[in-house]
Length: 223
Image (cartoon, rainbow, N blue to C red; front, top):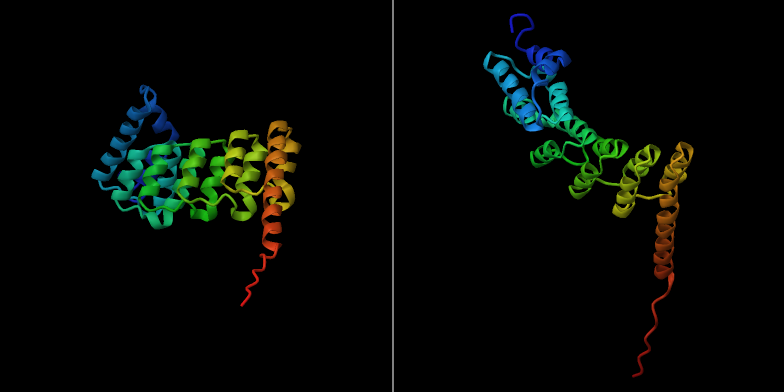
């Protein structure tokens, strides 16, 4: 504490890869590692450390590591959710840390925070359960021209692509960019899914337009 001061001690100690390796090396389970890092943070807080100006980094780092208890402790110690929660959700989604994500979402972070970056991060990394959780909580699969679909397609995550299409992502968005990304990366199964399910989307849309253009039958009334 004397070396770094109260406003940066958490950043330098908890955020240190060397400290994390030394602390977590003997521990086998994720629960034990989460508890150990939380004890470290709580000890620093008792010594007078504060999240301070590093709150955004600390929350994102804790969420990205799946340290759910640390995230909760930081929030209770004054790390504001308003300016930091969205970035933390993105980090948790990229790592597929569902428990951390659920805690952030239940604390008021929107699944659409950071312009939908959490869904894009989950899709790019192939984190299907994380993407499904975000979709259930209101993330928009069509946001930014179905960009999440493009991320999943470019990375070859077939199950994620199918889930996004089922949730309403548009295979033809951005001029069919998702399909081109999949083809260029050599993801044949993903490209086939985009062609097949995208064709179904187009047929459904065409049928809806046709139905809307058909005039309603006239009913003649004879007095």
